[in-house]
Image (cartoon, rainbow, N blue to C red; front, side, top):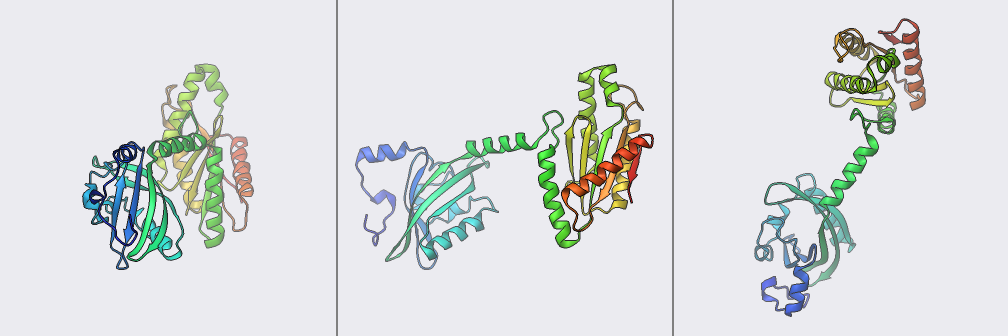
Length: 304
């Protein structure tokens, strides 16, 4: 097809074997044309992924806007910027985005396209492939790597990643940041008396109590065994202590399946000091936790 004589796909005769081959491809091969005034259309679309949007490819041969309007709202400006950079610098487009299907669900699409300047604007030759299954698997693996199997809470790895980020923000903007270290008192006796299955249930119930008392921006993590950490961004020590005391009281009266009053927790609190490292904050919170244990348990301890 001459580059200066773009025609809609239905006017381009092709051998039957090419049509059959392209329609069996697990994706979409395309040409995207952009005129100097910004108007875009698809002179060519083929492959078994063209049904994703429920749009007629013959319509897209005249105007690409109906397809672009199916992009996820936050992905639209990113793709438009990628197209603009590619047109300006004649660089390939390599990106991915979410596309709304006819059932109003979204598919993840990977796009690769090479631009070429022609008399009537810029013409891209490209390939789009549905990578929804791959993205779902990546998200599943990411959740597994960041999640405690028993409680569904964040694990130590996730806590450390988030703590690094929050400390960086606190150091840069002097935002308050507090950390609680929480430990179940005499947890070994729970397992010894009621068994490990009941002990596991206590851990899961405590995780849920913590979730219910925290804000969406807070993070609760299980560090291992019966030890938990609660990270509270934008929270000074005083407010953190008030929350910790309410949590301590709520745990003490909750029936974890072994009777009210049989499960208590000790909590140590530390507020981030500008310039302190992640390890320094954890160390101070840990010291306060052990002080709460030594002081009789079932209490909150804040250091100087």
